[in-house]
Length: 411
Image 1: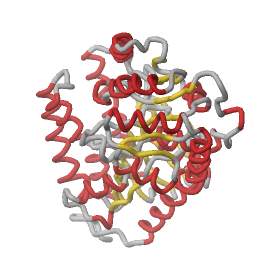
Image 2: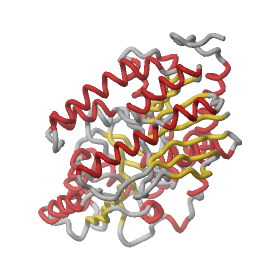
Image 3: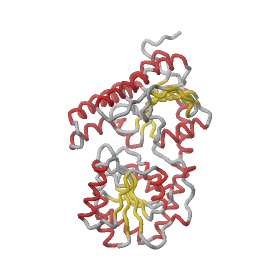
Image 4: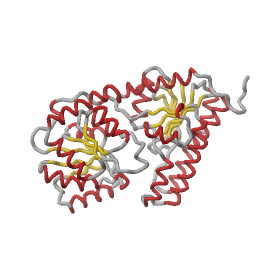
């Protein structure tokens, strides 16, 4: 296959689904993928390079955090996306795929209609709902702007882009249900949950399991206020009371304010010595904490924008052979029930703390859960298996005659 891929991810993309699923797995099978991406780092001019199984057109990006810089970078990204008209006209792409972009999706729709090329959309997050939720809950710095974005993006996504797409990939089975409820036929929706590249995570070693000393409980992920990670710090008082050698490691944090907020709370609860907050770490360093963990945790606060999520951290924990405590959530519940790799409880401090203590105090059961989790990932959630499913869906799409386009040249 030969297709063009536009994504909101910057170049080079760091998200595991783009990097592992497309650049490594699908491109590694001989499929050619051309890319339209904006540079992650400041560059004075756009460039064209061989990358990821094809050619990448990398758009210009200027340095700075000012409003003017942000506006100019939006314009640079838009100008780079306009290249798709020339690319679609010159190349016989099997399809064009757009991930998590709205204006670029409209451009791709027009270009594909002109050439009779299939148009595929990939939705990884409920962006319209997120903007509206942030504005309603007071998390937004510019609530009026977020409300406007939420309504505009919702209209474009559910009334224009998805109805026009030949196929739509979504992040989870719950998101599939949510999108179908907006009027999009389930027949053209495919759920592709997050996975891991097992080539980067070797099988569990006996040295990875803690023996003696502190009992390590590890969380990797965002510490932003919307995540309500205060929940973990507050319930850890109960964990320490039941297991004095327990230690909590919070690995992540986009801003210094995130870290300081949780440090103040830890001090108020008398947990300065028991709670460590690292801030952002490179992935390999973060994974080292997981490798040495006794228990890993995946709290997802009740939030309509998190409900359709497919948490990457959950499958990463399982890939490292770690038992998990997670709260009730469509995908977390399904994964832990099918794998037998952890305990799923309500998003309440008492049950969550009790589940952590239960696993810390029964290391044999915890180790058995961890091994079950690794086997589950090998069978269902490694990107080799996920690539098989995505590749099969692409072939199925291409085997069908494309739907006639209004105004399409039928010669």
